Image (cartoon, rainbow, N blue to C red; front, side, top):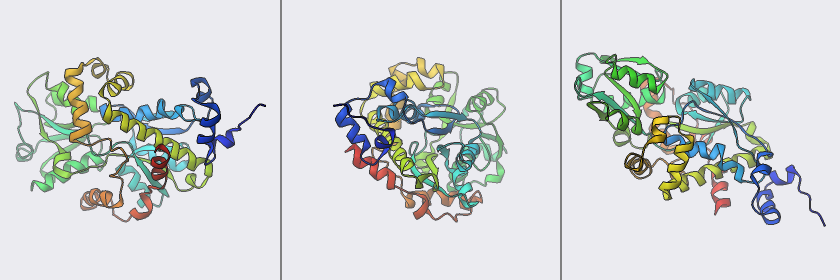
Length: 347
């Protein structure tokens, strides 16, 4: 007797387990023929973004009924939320500032997961010129950020406030590319820039560049990017199942990253945007991995940090700066429903 399972059955609440029972492991070719989620994401893949990208491009197709996601990179972070709201994308791997700005403007968005937790960004300067944020403020110096009001800018503002430094004494300029910011620092056109920890380590090889500030140590867990979707999209049962599947893929990647350096290294060498980063050896990559997994805690096994209280602590900085009004109902916006189901199914 031949058993035929429709796509509808595979996407149903018990479909994944049923498919696994009858079919066993899903061949790659079959997985590629499954549902393809459209997901807007950040333009480049740094070391901290590798697990999320693995989940989108590789991990999700290991679950019955799904192919690799249609990943849509964009350098304009607000566009991620805009296209999810417009229905041009199913979900977003989006920055916190744009997501909550849209929510405060009336968008019905839900934060259902984390692209990663905390931040791998550090503030770097040429130590031959300045050795502290206080030095930069004293001379009315310049710091380049992605955009005024984004998580990077607010993160810096929070550090300045904690240190009693008037933010108006520093000239902030916008540079959308981390590569452009690094080149501006090397050329002496700016005094400091935020960059990922691996970029800072690579830059230190070129001269007397030092980390001025590690925001994750001064501000606690600082959310940078989230997995989000509209409430209306999540009303459909098939979409609910898709959200759970995506989160299972992300959780799997987090857990693999935390437990297996060699696995993480292999994914980084395949998925990272920087050719130089891909070419680095263990003496460089292992400390980066250890910092991300242990010191920063970027990949919590069950996304334990995804709570309304944790977001409230972060968003207070945005409100204080005037970047957000602080009107979002976090008990509604931060929705662990699909995450808890993903954790249950993985167990």
